[in-house]
Structures are given as C-alpha cells and as structure tokens.
Image 1 (cartoon, one colour):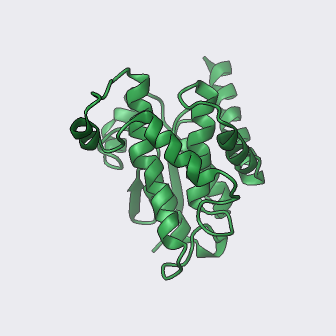
Image 2: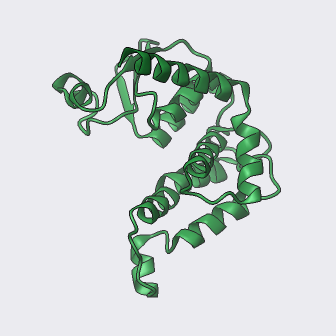
Length: 213
C-alpha cells in the first residue's frame, strides 16, 4: 500500500483533532482544505466521505472518516509513534474505553445540552439515550482524569489526545464546565509540542482565509 497520507479538513472543525494526531505521528502528509458548502458537498469529496463532512483521511487506498476511527487507525498504522497500547496489552481496554466514551456518550450528552434537548427524569428514558444525563457523563469522565497523567496506562496515547481535545474545546466554548480536574488534565496535554504545532498550523490557515475574504 502507498504510504501517502492525505488529510481532508477545514481549520475550524474537528479536523483540528486529527491534525494534532498527525503531528504526533510525525509521518509526512498532504492537507486538502475544504470550505463549508460547495466544496465539502461536491461529488469529488462525497466519493471520499458521502456525509460531505470533515475530517477524513486517505492512506494509500484506505479511506477513514470519524475522528476516533482516524486516531485509532493512525495509532495502529504507525506503531513506532507509540500512541496506542499493544493489542495484547492490558491497557488496550482502557484505551478503547475512553476513546469511544468521548465519541459516544460524552459528545451526545454535550450536543444535546447545547441544543437544549431535555431527557425526561425517567430511568427508562435515561437508559434509552445511553449517556443517562450530561452530569452523569461529566462525572464519569472527571473520575477518569482525576489524579492521573494518562487515561490508559503510564504513557500518552491517542485516547488522551481525544479526551483532552474534547475537554479543551468544550471548556473554551462553554459547553463543558471548567472543573479543576478537567483543566489540569487537558492543560497538560494541550501543551504538548505536537498540539501547539498543530494549533499554529490551523490558526495560520484561518488567518489566511480571513485576509483573503
């Protein structure tokens, strides 16, 4: 398989998470910037992602969409970067757990909170929505990041990248409260060199777009 990596994104999107991951991986990649609207919905890009959304990644002949899937794919495709526990390691379970906790219960709970979707105070209804309540999801995540450096073992992984990204973005825009445990955990990982480098790239692209408009 070709080693070419092509990253489809917009600098103000969830693609910022994947950009950070690519910078952590350290492999060369090419970026395709898509605008919201025509280019993202064009047939050429819908052949990559029929949803017409970013981010997406093409690695040779393999296409991956959805942030946690892209992160997990890159971690396994580039094991030398050390961004995932080995498949047979005991930390693989917590790694998957928190990677997909943020992709599932946390994101759904936060999105519904922003949209003012109220879950009835009924155990049957709370069971149906999966995350139960926003407070339950936040309390669960707070328990996972309190007093630990990493959510899966004793080293940084793609799970930390994804959890920290969710917390950082949510606290910045007020969709997640600034609890001390969240600030300590996210702040530590968002200060990583690759994270700072990734933000600078995307912020630079936003500045260029603003000057061109």
